[in-house]
Amino acid sequence: NAGVTQTPKFRVLKTGQSMTLLCAQDMNHEYMYWYRQDPGMGLRLIHYSVGEGTTAKGEVPDGYNVSRLKKQNFLLGLESAAPSQTSVYFCASGTGDSNQPQHFGDGTRLSIL
Amino acid sequence: GQNIDQPTEMTATEGAIVQINCTYQTSGFNGLFWYQQHAGEAPTFLSYNVLDGLEEKGRFSSFLSRSKGYSYLLLKELQMKDSASYLCAVSSSGGSYIPTFGRGTSLIVHP
Image (cartoon, rainbow over all chains, first blue to last red; front, side, top):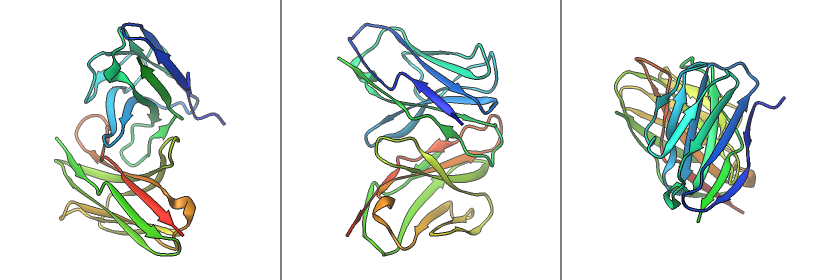
């Protein structure tokens, strides 16, 4: 029972490089989310999706792009990585019902040098 | 917008009781979640409150007062494994279900 799976788990990039983080869920959830977590800052929403083919900006969207071509996948892209994007990235999924919790992946630890 | 406040860090002794508070300001309150997050791991769901009162789940209980914009998580019979961050998240009505997280409270349980 996989739940929410994030790949890769760790990555080191140089400033200016690009990469894509992949999130996959097997719970048939409509909603998917990307967060970043920095020390003392809690979870901050980057982008989210309320269904296949939809995306929307969260609290800190600058420097990131997302795509939801398939219901089970939500991709987060960094076009030109910056040191300020060094963080732990969490993907989550949910039903969209207000009384149902989010389910989180194990996170991707990303360092930008 | 939403404003959610939690203490940054708390310490407690094994076997004791600890209360972690969360205060919030939001328009159209639609529920409050508590999550537990161990270091280096994903957040996991603990509890959900939408009505005033106390919800008990074993050693963990969560309380909500909507009129005061206040919730707390009560942990009884503390164990070393309870050392973790505890995240409060508030959901507001109107539009998509997008909860907002507080900055989390780091709980350290010592022998």
